[in-house]
Image 1 (cartoon, rainbow, N blue to C red):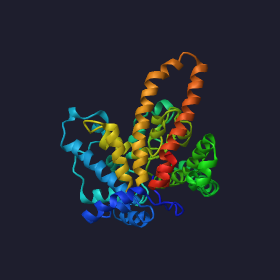
Image 2 (cartoon, rainbow, N blue to C red):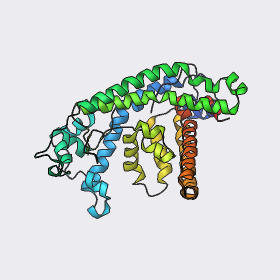
Image 3 (tube, one colour):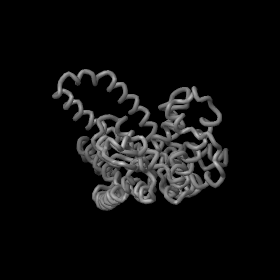
Image 4 (cartoon, helix red, strand yellow):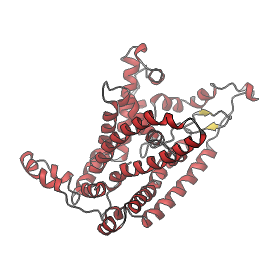
Length: 367
């Protein structure tokens, strides 16, 4: 999730004043990082060098391949998890394979990140048959392997991108994020009104991500990449590279469920390169890595540091209280409704700094 700061959010911060002496001493404009008046120019420059979307995707792919080669050539098989063993690259890729994996036209602009072995299987034309061989087709009435077409999946995803784009263009004009920190709104609106508006504004900001990720998925599917196998009903699935599940996001009853269905490929990357490998504080370090990967805007760090607290709190509540609501269907429904509302509001509160990006509007919102 990345974006440019709204032009109307031009605030001065106390943080920049505090950092000014240190900036003078070091000769580094640390104070400007927390100064939203000049942050857009600085951050655009830094993003051009290290934080734009193509480079973010390439970073994911380089680190993914590095760990998979390390698993295949530098670790013992008994030390690997089942997934690490399946994805391990045991033959050093050629330079051409390496560049093709990093810079192929399907994912170089907007991703998503994928595994090297899946990509090579696609290039060699065997990824679909490999998935299909896992199913006993004779029991399903087929005499030979079928040839699944991505056409239906691509059409569906293109329709989703169109709807998402229209929603984004409509909703963001009707529900601007600037109202969240508008003086009149903050001081005159009651708490419940502000809470509801926060939820609506965050909902209005989602379609742009739905648009970008679904379009990227459709592009890969149109090229023939992204086949994941067959579901329990015998339907062909083209969701190997899908980055979100909109229904599960909007109906999530826990912070964990929400994160598992939002930016799926990035979440998977964070899990494989950080969460499963660090020896201590995996949750904290994973959120910190995510913030660093996204860029330099202060709002990113507010969001991901808050995410650590929300994650720990959600786990504690679920582990200690969920068991009391499983004795009857009615109690389970009540639990689901309450946890859905709490989850959606908690997510809205957590990601608001991500949308506003700057320091002062974030502090104003938190107050």
